[in-house]
Image (cartoon, rainbow, N blue to C red; front, side):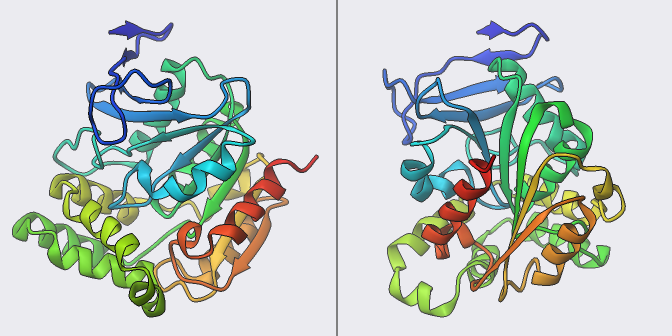
Amino acid sequence: MDSNRNGIALDRVALDSAGRDSTALDRIDFITTGDGYRIATRLDGDARRPVLILANSIATDHRMWDGQVAALSEHFRLLRYDMRGHGRSDAPSGPYSLDRLGRDVVELIDALGIDRAHFCGLSLGGFVGQWLGLRAPHRIDRLILSNTAAHLGPAPQWDALIRQVLDQRDMTAMADMFIGNWFPPHMRDAQPELIEGFRKTILATSPEGLAGSFAVVRDADLRRSNALIEAPTLVIGGRDDTVTLASHSEAIADTVPGARLVLMPGVHMLNVERQDAFVDTVLDFLEAV
């Protein structure tokens, strides 16, 4: 185990994407956060390129970006991680806070010796991106907020989901809900193997991790503070998204000074549903002078 200059532990564990021992350059590592939990992380691409952090949505892990790695890593060193409560990262019990999820990212890049990076977050990852733009502006170059919102109420609906997932613990109903919200019917019919991969990830998600993350969304309200974000910002929304509506994307773009708004035909997981358009839009924004 190594420690960085801020005392954050970095566990150099050589694993491949299936969790097996590997000597590959690109591998799963773990950092231990200031509050004592492990966060799984993966780097892909040339270390000499600028870093682009990709943050996952709720009930997924870093693999939700697998389809975009080849194209994006031609231009950037990609840093993906499993958000607290997801994938191979630890899933402590109790409600999580947006502040804690944001500090997980800051401690992650501290441990890896990264001073500044671009950040792209989708859904819950987009909430984290807004926090970083506000609370860690000196660490973020350009900010991409996809299929997200500044606030998603009312609180009782999240309390009900928290009770459901902790009481039932069987993630089948949650998987049905998320898959229905994330992908349009024609895509679910045409690409069953891809959809099944996402379903398996949901089913493997810790109930404590999902409940803790629901609490983040319940409590987050960035509607006014987003006016203080200074990083060049791209907001991507789905015209047919029923989770984070197009109006949520429009509201963020209206609040963040100088933000660029792109609305695509599609639902919630636009990086998958509209992969080529999504990647082109991201690259156009990040490489703009």
